[in-house]
Every structure is written in C-alpha cells, then in structure tokens.
Image (tube, rainbow, N blue to C red):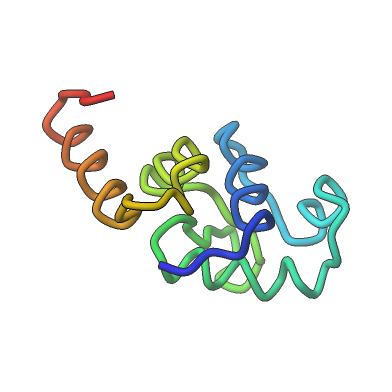
Length: 103
C-alpha cells in the first residue's frame, strides 16, 4: 500500500475515535483541501483502511476499519528502513483476530 504522508495518516487518526465522517468535515478538521481529501478517501477504502457507509450509497460517509486502526497506530514505522509495513500490518491483524498481541 502506498500512503500519502502525512494526509492519509491524519485522516485515519481523525477517524480513530470510531465516529463516521465526510470529506467536507475532514477537510475542515485537518485544514486540507476538500478535493484532495475527496481523492484520498476512496483510495483508503480500496486499501481496506476505511469503509464507505450509509445511509445512502453515495453519501460520502466513511468510518475506519480494524486495519485502518492498525495502520494509524504504526504510523512511525511506515517509512522505517528494514520494515515491510504491509507485512507488519497483516501480522498485527492476525494477532488481533487470534486474540493475542505481539506489541
């Protein structure tokens, strides 16, 4: 996965409170261009980091997934030399689904 730093991590962090939100609100919260946020949200959803939720199919309302929470929680390791970030995320997700932690 190729993330836009820092915007994608900022979006994930803003949604980490578990509340749903839209591009308009996120652009205001993050003080970023709304059009840019609008382009990033579907990409994050394609990576499985966000879910697009209703009430209407095209409402533009998003919420963070478990995978998104893991990615947000390991922001500092995204560009760390020698770390395969995708493998790190997948191992953390497997640990969560097994009820174990390897933190």
